[in-house]
Image (cartoon, rainbow, N blue to C red; front, side):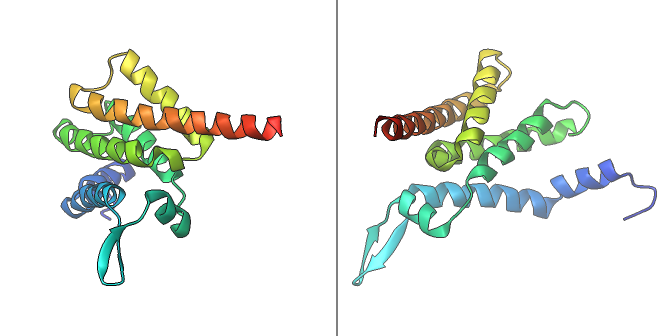
Length: 161
């Protein structure tokens, strides 16, 4: 790193480097595709397996979904950290992240699900979400609502026993 380049400039270059941007977009697209149709070959013919089964067997920590969205939201709302020409790209990443959350929200740890739900709802109520993100944001809200309801049902079941 050039000694005259500040840490912020270096971070900006790393975040929006062509390779980094391509990988970021590719990863979210891959997660979206994988969460849509998981296939396994059984006896020579393909069959689908459940997303829950795949997530459970992989022991993935789905908290990264909401943590990623939090980071993207903070970049989208900061005036100084992101150059204006990169905001469209960041909005696209946010949409991809929200789409994955809408499919995998039931696997997000409950505390992160509640926090993400509240932040998304606040953003939508305040009309601070771009029009391109509204549909994906509502899909994510639905998934996070279901996650919270599942938790309440399981907690209620334990209390009743």
